[in-house]
Image (cartoon, rainbow, N blue to C red; front, top):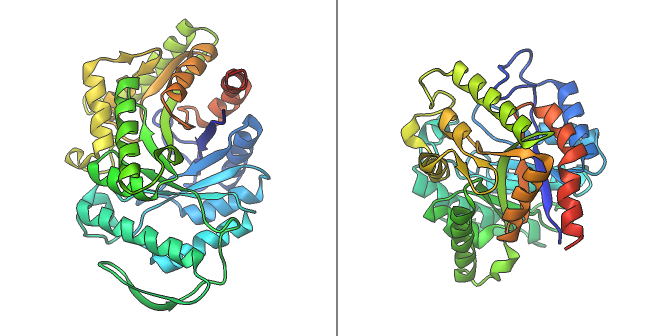
Length: 359
């Protein structure tokens, strides 16, 4: 049984427990971080997108130049680059990296953050635009002759591209937990990305995604499922929990009395996925074998923020619990970003893969 491991590239050594210092883009750190993921056995790394971040296309190209096998999952928000141009940009990076690129499509949860880049559309419109955008991108990749298009958001005539992805198209990952996300993702996603909720709630979301895929005439089993976690491991469960509480203390000391301080937009603009993490945290800090929701509560669910805590053996089994309900991609990132990647490569990933190989 094949399960994909995805990490996350940082352009500098920062996290919720490490305040920024030095340049926002550290070329040497990006190189070392990408190489560490490759050496640890990761399949891909996600390059995130925010209204303040470095350009992901450039980061992917730089990291790819210093690795040989590692794949790149480039987060992309429709609406800021015309889909005809995005199709060519994505195909170009894929060609330059030897077919190692996939795209993670995010429609955008926050009106405030979208407006920082000049987008004043509402959330419903953003999902309709994403749907049309992905239709156009795929048409550009597949077209053998110039194409025309006239839709709600885009209009062009005679578009053509001399460059296509190495394999004809890129894998499309899609994130979200709203009804609109299920609808658009069910139509387009090769892999649908969720944040780390308890097993029962995750199973409910998987069922919703698969129903949407079926409603679009697709085989539901053709849609992979990604779930994101922040593993915290130690030599024993007790050591891991001691480390976990130290991480939580650091997070709360940076934002005393203000659990939403790490959000980059008003708390009322949280996406459905973030609110689901907070709902899980309200039911208790610990769930299932090793899921810990306290970091989500402490950060206001700023991004993927639930942890799996325990020894490498405990966390490996917890990850496998999600595989057992249909998860195909495990996206993990650490609070000590580079050190955690090295540690997971030595102790965590081999355990999961060994168990899967014996099934």
